[in-house]
Structures are given as C-alpha cells and as structure tokens.
Length: 144
Ligand SMILES: [Zn+2]
Image (tube, rainbow, N blue to C red; front, side):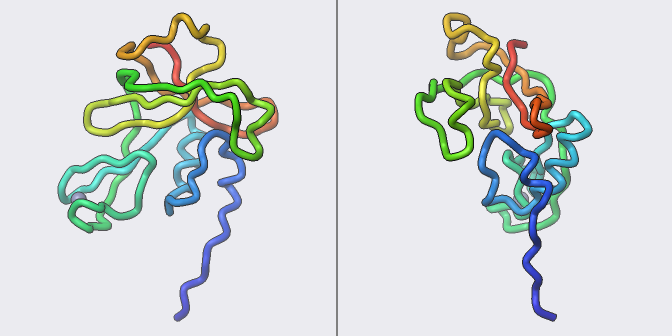
C-alpha cells in the first residue's frame, strides 16, 4: 500500500507559529480547541517535546503520549518583531518568546496586552489558549 499524504485542514486554524515540520498537528489543534496546549512525551525514555513530535529523536521510539503544558515556565528570551512572516503582518508588532518549563521549552508569542516594560527575562509565565476574532486559535504567554 502506498502511503497517502495527509492534507492538514485543521492546521489552518492555528495562527501563531509555523508547525509544518510536525506530524501531529491535527491532534495539537484538537487540544487547542479543548483549551489545552499539548506536547508529546516519549514513553520509553521520558523525553518531552514541544512542538509535539511523532517520534523521539533521542531513542528513536514512536511510543509517544500527549501531555498538557501546565504550570508556569521561565521566560528565557524574547524578541519584539518589527517584521513578520507572510500572513502575520497585521499582527505587528508582537513579541516572540521562549519559556523554559524544565523538561521542555515552549516557543510562542507574548500576549500583546502586556506592556513592554513589564516583560523581563526570568519572569514566570503561563501558556494559555487564545481564540482569535477570525476563528483561528493560537496560544499566548501571559503573566503567571
Ligand atoms: Zn525516547
């Protein structure tokens, strides 16, 4: 049987980061629709992945399970964008950031309602699902 390439319709709903390299995007968007941001964890070696991956690159296992990104992460770095990828221009300016949750890191954007001067490296933030006016879903980082 030839492998049929799956067309990813639900992916269109996701408005923040390009997730074209991951294979479990459909499930990821399902979690978003339930108000959850999820990654995958390797059942064999325990390695956690965000964005979710279908295979563990550490032990090459495909024995993965979903976990919910919960609690708070530390802001490792962020960058205010003046230029955005095609499709996100009207969102400018926004800040992309990386939160360190210990076992994994989450890449995303900072809630635009947070003033620049209140954003500091090392601050605790949480990842929350955000419903956009155009019907798309993404997630943003808010102050914990
Ligand atoms: Zn593994």
